Image 1 (cartoon, rainbow, N blue to C red):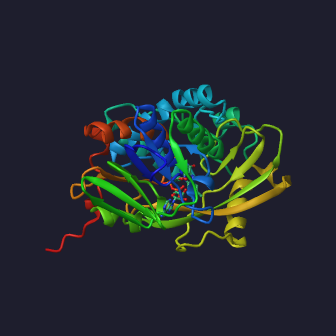
Image 2 (cartoon, rainbow, N blue to C red; image 1 turned 90 degrees about the vertical axis):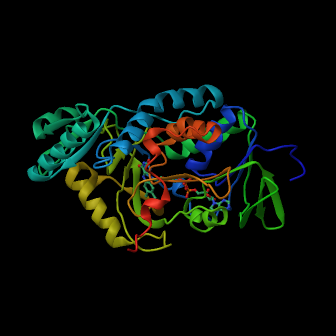
Image 3 (cartoon, helix red, strand yellow; image 1 turned 60 degrees about the vertical axis):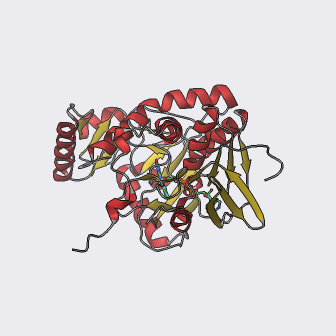
Length: 372
Ligand SMILES: Cc1cc2nc3c(=O)[nH]c(=O)nc-3n(C[C@H](O)[C@H](O)[C@H](O)COP(=O)(O)OP(=O)(O)OC[C@H]3O[C@@H](n4cnc5c(N)ncnc54)[C@H](O)[C@@H]3O)c2cc1C
């Protein structure tokens, strides 16, 4: 690129993962340029549910539980910093979150799992098991079928679109450059530098971070990395604005700062198809109205589908290339929750080479099939 004298790092992908990393790098003093695709790209960051969710994360994988908890605990500081820098309020609310249950046995099993996770972590896991009466004190509007919930004080939610806007504006305020509408098709390492091709343009830098969501699958092998990810569709509904009734986000219903109710949490293996289907929307709407019967009288104003970026075991891939030093791949399916970790410790690892203990197990080699 000729109009920029020098770039330390090129970040490919301007979703919440790429922008969190780019923001963190720029905050640390790097000269950073983000290359983001066009508006027809699949973008989980613009279609997600906005939860900062800790409970149940890392069952059987305590390092992921630690990584997630650390991110959740630092969200407030990121939100405050972004607001001071950009004036954008990301609508962070972290009063704790609720996993509702219609079945005593399921509730008891969830509680057992969190106790076991606490043991693995060497802590008393921060949660409470609420029966229906206890839950009604927090959310009086639950329906008669709800038997209780798991409450975790670390959970919360944000506006995902405001978060993305704040990261972009914060990144620019720290001197970063975002180039939109460029589809990176080739990355090569030559003469100790990365040459990143997008159509007839070439961008050059000493470090490249691949954070292109589902497109990482094709880009990673070009620099000796792997990202065996697949799309998993989620469908969402949003309602008209209603009086505040839900002060604690649930894993499939939350009320935003503007009063709209967001309903979601479908998981479908349908390939690169982000359309909506009446059957699935009806299923998730029925579960939400079973949880909060008053929702039956609330109008839905919009629905959409979006594709999760999912690895085979559901955990992130964080890897530095040994074949092409200076190249990194980052992909995860909880990019909102993990934003502070990506802007902080992940960036420190990229800049210093000191890998946080929590992410050591998240290399793509874990998916290699051992033949004999
Ligand atoms: C329905 C749904 C609900 C979710 N709910 C939550 C939640 O509640 N909490 C949570 O933490 N996470 C949630 N997630 C996950 C979260 O949205 C993702 O982890 C996150 O958005 C992934 O961000 P990303 O930047 O990796 O990918 P994306 O958002 O997909 O962004 C990829 C970017 O790369 C760009 N790109 C693609 N190809 C190229 C190319 N060749 N060259 C240049 N740029 C390219 C695209 O333009 C895009 O901007 C949810 C996801 C979905 C789909």
